[in-house]
Structure formats: structure tokens, C-alpha cells
Image 1: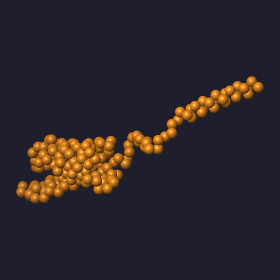
Image 2 (image 1 turned 90 degrees about the vertical axis):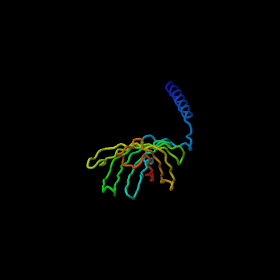
Image 3 (image 1 turned 60 degrees about the vertical axis):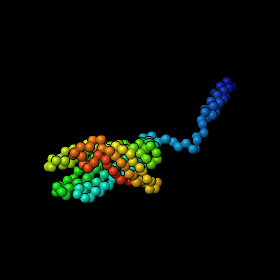
Image 4 (image 1 turned 30 degrees about the vertical axis):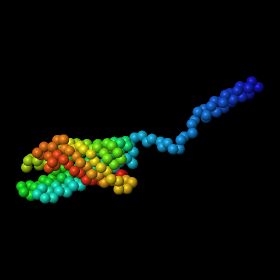
Length: 181
């Protein structure tokens, strides 16, 4: 009989505690999306720039990039650059190649600030090749072309413009695109 009373008391406290813990659980809000932690492949985007300049000096620019949307405002990434440079007056042709890292800050949905460091290898004084650093900074405009792609226009200024820079002027105009992956 004593065992039955002890078991009944134990069962009563066990059930009472179980019921109390059940009331501590809150009902999840269906409108709140769980935050993903770590790498999210849906935040990757690709794209780049393609430039053509014809005349006495011809420049062909192919610069693909891969980026990651870190927050709603900040994205960063890296890319490669290939430039074909031809000067018809001096009968000079060369190929320039290199890489870059960049960061963007969205001021508004379609307007962003852009900064990058671009290291380019070229024959700046024939026949010697060496690396030249370009530091373009400026602003850009993004025109959406659907849910996952956009056209970009950037007006940049090279903070490290020298006579050996592959860009004819410290002012750089880039037209390109972004495609979400």
C-alpha cells in the first residue's frame, strides 16, 4: 500500500512538471523565417564587364566576376581581367591579364558604391612585363532585368593612375551585368 502511495505521488509530480514544461513552449510565428547560418549558395552572383574601344588605340576588355551578397547592403567578390591593347600608330600590341577583388555597398536598391583593387600584368615598356596596381573607386547603377539578373553601369576613378596604367584616363566607365546563381 505504501508503494502505491509513493508511486501515485511520484506520478502526480511527474505529470505536474511535464504539464508545466509544456506551457513554457511558445507557438512559433509562421511569419518569421528562420535565419540561415553559414554559406548560402543563393547569395552568389556572377557577371562581369565587356568593353570595346576602337580607333587609333583599340582595347578589348573581358572581365568576368563572382560575388557574394554578404548582407542586404554589402557584397564582395573577385574576378579576372583580360585586356587586348593595340596601338596602330606605334605598331604595338599586347595582352594584359590579372585579377581583382571588389566590394559594393548598396545606398539604395539600384544605386551602389564600388571599390576594388586590380593587379594587372602587362608589357608597359616593351619588352618588359610587370604588375601594375589599379584602385578604381566610384558609384554604379543597377537596372534589374528580371528576378535574378541586372545590367550595371559604373563610373570609377583610378586612385593609382600612372603612365603605365592600362586605362587611358583615371576615369573608367564600365558597363556590365550580374546574374544570380
